[in-house]
Image: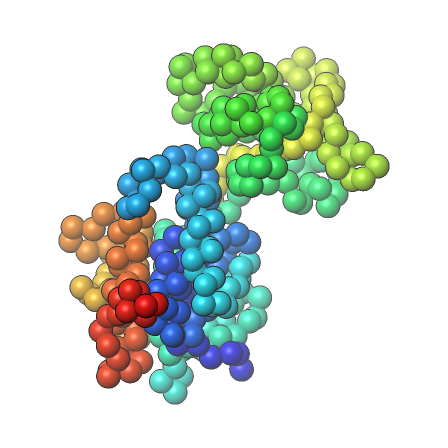
Length: 330
């Protein structure tokens, strides 16, 4: 049987990370279970390069930098963090929850906090991707923009037919030596003319109706070139040190019905203390719904605090309802 915790947090986005910090600050034993290989949820998936202006204490901060600081904060009291693990089963046995992941890992916990967001996003790949030579590099090509320092003064290729790829290219044009876009379609989805003009102003080469055909590596297995067929079916080889791809995402919702969780229009119904209809299971963040709900990063923080405090009371009815960090760390 698996290791036992006070709170098992399903979801390692901003809400889950803050919940982990707050719970461990209250000396609860915590595990975060995140389906993706990286932490940060939708902020890291969709907004790593975007500036965020509505989180208290930050006049402005990029999504990536916010997530980095939240991971640092969450790690202060060393919660257990499992990434690449998707929870498929939650059962209650002997007054504790038994969680099983898709890979068979078992976790025991007194309570559960659902901070899943709207679900797990899986990256789409174009059909031609299957025809590319199999390699370790092929399986490791990034599908989200993070670690921006890695792109400084590099030759970058963005393979995408969407607005996301255009935004990445524009952002990277201020860091990289050069940026080019390989678009398998004849146009970009949901991109305005002014954004296309910005690509031109930033000297970003755009190759339309282009099909990636190969990656060329140097003697140290580092990317040095990519090859593609242009719209005239001519093979073109261009220098490249970094490659990013984005062809859209598919959403996999968590199996709330299977877990017995009441939902309404795809969102979890919660009480004012963030409790679900299942005793001992709480929820917070974008996945919850109640009157007056706002889907902001900062909202998730307050919901996480409420959920953790009441999870603690569920475990120990004599626990203090809330604690102040200025008291704990004085």
